[in-house]
Image 1 (cartoon, rainbow, N blue to C red):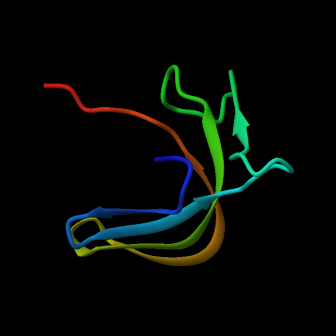
Image 2: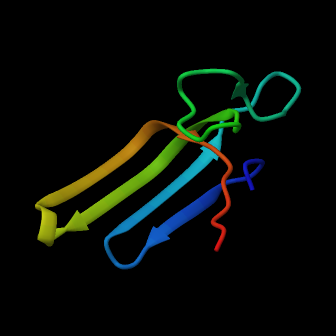
Length: 79
């Protein structure tokens, strides 16, 4: 999941594509025990967001970004 490029889509309002930065050995760069991870227990995976698009008229948001930094984390929804 965090090892490769990935895309997140939320309905027809949001889409983001990102890929982790890699260290000299080729593994994803991570921060552990850092304030940058907002998911308790998950390391923060530093990434580059090649694209981020969010357009939601209901809340007045229209954003289209390219080439920004991103932070990834691992989580699972449980019922």
